[in-house]
Image 1 (tube, rainbow, N blue to C red):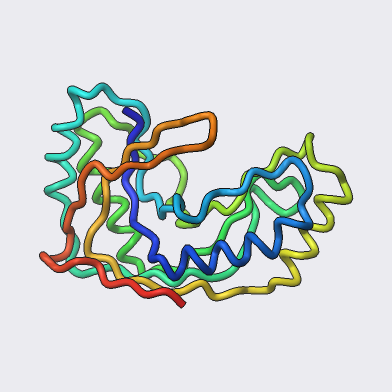
Image 2: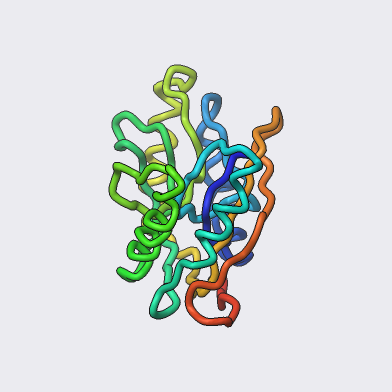
Length: 198
């Protein structure tokens, strides 16, 4: 099973992300693979391929994760990884309280005894809107997409407050990834996450 830990994106935020994709898509041409907004998650920890026999231990470890209070997220802005000159990923920004990075560290610590390695990179919350293949993109297409992203400015997509996170399974299919929730965990009390779109 290919597993990761994530926060669900509110329907209103997904709709707003889809609107921006629809605005940008005509300017990109070939060489851009757009993410289905319905499948976008805010990833806290990518676990990777694990044997089914290990899933119960992972679930037990995640069930022990706690935080003092829910965490907030504001979804806004657009950017590139690694940068605008050599773009591989177009993302929507996520601004959070310090509690979200702390939550990601707690998840890392809970999984480390199971020999699931910690991330070496600093936690950078983001939502992937598209993946780019520069070798398949024309120079004109890339420039047009850059201009349109700049023209979009810093769009607001919505906000959310979370008290729960999900263990997710990802199946890589020819038509794209298929996501299934394995289990939902409350980390800040017993209340469900409150979330709103824009």
